[in-house]
Image 1: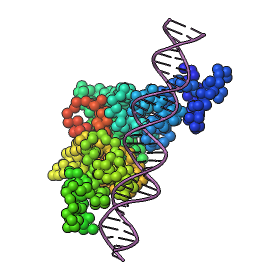
Image 2: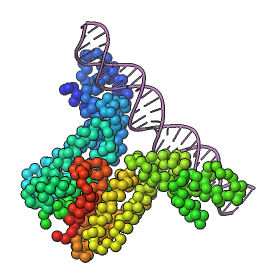
Image 3: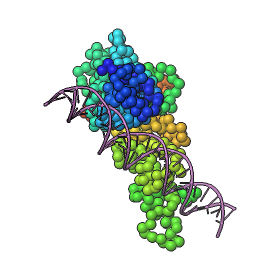
Image 4: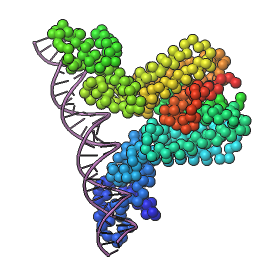
Length: 245
Length: 245
DNA sequence: CTCCTGAAGTTGACAGTGTCAATATCGCAT
DNA sequence: ATGCGATATTGACACTGTCAACTTCAGGAG
């Protein structure tokens, strides 16, 4: 347990060497005996917390290469493990993929939440979350595309449950803000009408998601190039439709 | 050159039949004088208009399997041609992919345009195009995802120029409507301020694009399930932010 | 203390992919 | 008619996801 972290870090460092070589080497060291395993020891045959390591490796690769096509084998390589090891922890490529996406959702949720800490005005909060949302996507293209890639939605594997809970974060935040605004009479929506609330939430989400995607695909620039504070301006325009007039 | 056109037309018409067969046919018609070769013969070594045939094959596959991962080889197979033949007409997989996406953009543009024929009111026109846009995406998931997939934006190949002109269609329509509305004083945007117009257009596009994507990925249903006329309601909500208040 | 079972990792294989290089075919201008 | 250039084919390569069979090892039963 405590050892997890240690071996994980060492592994990451050792990634630059031949995977096979390092693997065999570690065997030798391991067999060498229980004496003085400390300094150079790669890892034991069993990793310890490979699941976590794989998710981390995936996240790292996602950050390194801004448009990267998720490859199970490369993740395994980065984790310093054979190409089939992941199958002990994930049923599918999609399953691993979903797990990596999930941490993305967590981070997005956290950023949105902390960005509106202390903001009382629902209007301001809504716009703020929108801006944070878009900027998150623009700063992490590959990660964002993975999170909203089609593969996840249709993955019938167990991972989709994990993803489900993760997405709840983002949309729950928008939902809370809009509900609060509606109750306070700030928005043009009645807090009583469930459907209107849902449509409002979806509208807000669709707006920021669409803007992020169009930006990432380079299409936004064909419409509105060189506009400063674009996310904020669009967020305001979207919000304008929800505010009480 | 003149013959070029002829064979191309024949191919297009015959798209619903086996591509190979049709190609052979047109070819044979031209050669027929020679020997009246035969009923069952395949096609000539050279296809005639393989480029078009490949685009058609791709479109067909896109329609058949609603989520299909574009595979160059499968397109070639469907066109009845070897797996490397496409490289004579497209520099890349991305290039072919862009060409197929382009016809999607054309169709989307046509649908949007014809849907607002005769509608004078810019508000109504804007909402109508939005609904048509979303419904197109929902009716053609694979095609829509291809059109807005990341691969195209970053393809440095020649095809992206083709795509560029194609995308212009969709956004030009929104642009026209919004400009007209602004000039008529119907929208909360000044026709004079270029930037405001651009932001308005982008907001509208982002809204419908985001809704389409969230719907396709099954995420919209986690927010607003079982809502009838959802596209129209969201389109109205988005438009509300653009209309004069 | 041994044994052995089951989880975790490894190796090897297979079909499928995008792409490159070499080759074959054939329409067409000379 | 003949050779050339565009078009199509075959073969190869590295890479992918996934399956099956094997090895390693920790920890509990006897």
